[in-house]
Image (cartoon, rainbow, N blue to C red; front, side, top):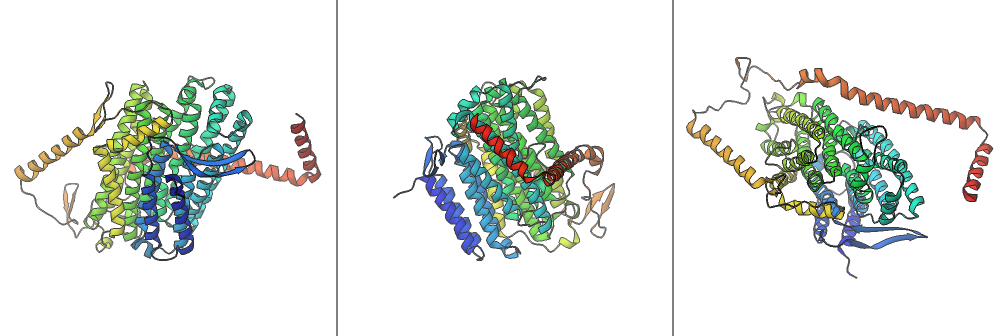
Length: 624
């Protein structure tokens, strides 16, 4: 019996997990897993995302409930990015990195394979019950990967993973509550029945559903104020796991929000749902949550002195751009949000692989004690350079295209405050990525790093490939805009009309072929002026420097990466980070107080009382 592409994909993912559980300790297991991810990617490209939905032949039936799986264009898009991220992460960690890894190889490979399988099950959800099962599978698989430890040690990793678990469980309970209400309303977990139930709900009930779904899925997407777990959890994970988590795992929250808020409830319904006693709608509220998620974590990233944490905080902020574009509901805005998800996956994977390559050679990622590594790791520097240009949203990289779409959509929709706020976030990003590349690769090389080598080829190939992807799709967005348009259509959204170079419409046009051509022509003119017409250059040793009107030679050690942006942090550092720590501790104290009170009441009251109360409630529910 021949398998359809979806079942083939599931089979390959399951076999990969089984193989890693059995032979994961074998030295070549990482390369075997990489081959499996490559095969899964090939299976995905057997689909035609613009055509009909692909159904799995496998389902689980029990009484009136069933679990079934299917792929539409949106699920396909997220699956391609997920499997590609796993391929890059596995390749990165399969060679020299794995030989130095002191943890359990079997657990590492199995956790990565388990995450991919769980994410595929989530993305292929055929109804809300299947979505709940897939959501829980991704949560526990992610917890296993986070708990392995690979940064500062096992203890910080486990503490961060446990903090994530608290958020994940709270989100799961919120999701379960929302599904119970929906089932009571429509007596089904099907998407069509849920859509009909949402259309007839009263405003207070619909508001409660929107808030429950935001709590459930916003925790994984790390929306404010549900974001404090993500940076330590992702940063303390072993390098391949951190690359995978940082590039795509948190975006499962974006996928789920797209399904529920956009496909089932509808952007028009959100826009009509007024927030009592304000001039805001549900759409406005979500947009402002997205914008605050852009700004505050981005400036928190600016404060970080560990390169891993700096990138992890940026991951939170970039998720805000994706949600902001999606919730606008226009062809240009939603295309920008979905395109930014693709761009960011490649960009963040590139940056994290470069940072972990430095850690592999140097032993740490402390930005106060690095610098000048461009002379020893030039290809890693090139990968990081490509990544930071894209993350900052500058041409010619793909990050510029998606941010331009979001900015243009905001201006077209008459939302200048949201536009200004998102640009403020981009300013913080530019400052942060300059700090990252400066303190890692520019300036003087430290004496203790004079003998280090470039990253091994097994680590360079995937990081340069991801950086090149971000460049090529920036120069020719048409390569992936077809995927985005198909995903828009599957959500019932207006579809973007795109061209070879980007977007062409009476209200907003972008041709990246011209932008890239002009940019490189300018570089060429500058090179001719500098090398051909300008004065002769003189090569000096990297240890030689100049500051404050004095030449500093190699004999005089001078380094200025320590506590970068200290003056700026003195002005803005105290007001945003401390407020969230206070909020989190207040919530924790409140939960602890309630738990202690409930525990004391439980111990003081006779167990017979609970039995009587439960029986009375059950009889009342049956009789009514």
